[in-house]
Length: 174
Image (cartoon, rainbow, N blue to C red; front, top):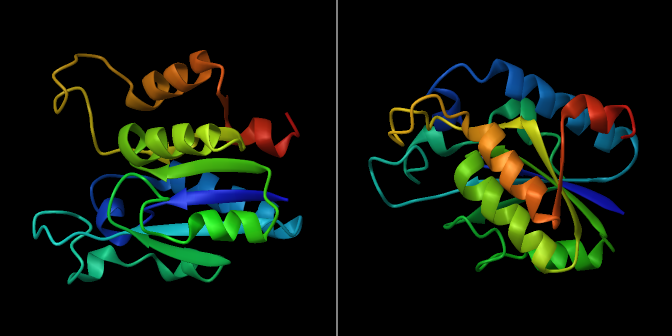
């Protein structure tokens, strides 16, 4: 069985900038996973930091209703590691998952670490680059001209451990 893990698609992140293309790609992937009776796992990052877009006592921490209804599982997590103090391992084992697809937010944190951790646990792992996003940019990182998604996608691809796809490649059966 295959599973898609959609990381931290939460209202607070969606307020940071226009993520309409990323959101549209995630919806296409969800539709395809549901159509093929595969598993959709949503993660919800929570934090006690009042400055965080994941602040637990804010409605910004919520997953948008248009996405929430499609999740087979919702996992609350407190770090970039979706396995840390969660039941993700049990969900993947119980559903006999062998392939994991990663997308969501933020590319350079949770998507990067989750991709590496899934590959390290023996799952055939795919990072969907254009169904992932970040509010990080060249100014935050003081790296003029950097495209965070492309940079992280290249690192993962070059690792030989994680396969990097675009939404259309997945939908076309790569």
